[in-house]
Image 1 (tube, rainbow, N blue to C red):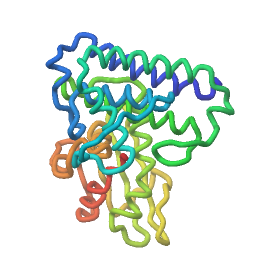
Image 2 (cartoon, one colour):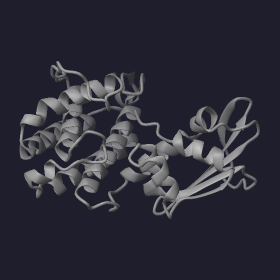
Image 3 (cartoon, one colour):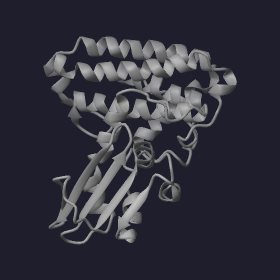
Length: 271
């Protein structure tokens, strides 16, 4: 059980930060638009509460109207159903629901055995071990935490260990992005460096139609993209556009600029 205790701790830290900030929010604050398309602060909170309710067994609310344009898949549909259902409630009511739902989820995690953490089952990414599913809950929750702080004009605070999980998850998708979205040629080496508190450099090699990580010390790369960790995860999560990312002072692209733009365009991998 101790092997996965960090997941419970990071989720608890992330959810506590959300609730703590919104304790003092006004109803007007809850209605502010976030960087998450179509959702206000209250909507983001409704999604997080609703998802925890759903995985604890609550039915998905009935949704009987056309889906908004930002809803593109079945995961988005049940998320939107919970959000729409809770729009009649006040921000304070949704916050109380969020506190209760997340507390119940944390209580359930505490009681899991290693075998239960490792059991394969449903997740938004397909069949995955339960610990992977809960790591994804960290990614989703931490990004939405930042959606809330961005909406409240309080961006780029240190929001704890969740950032390391998020940056690591998005860096792990780079072989897919290089192979499928960048137009890389045979033998190409691509480096991505994120700077800041979570500084890391990874190098991906494209050989035989496949891409994989190689030693990060490799220097003879065809493309090197350097940016801040905040810009990197925001682009990968679809929170900033390609042009905004490329124009940012923190972003530098060296080497094949065409491939660089394709890579940046293809970075968004969040469901």
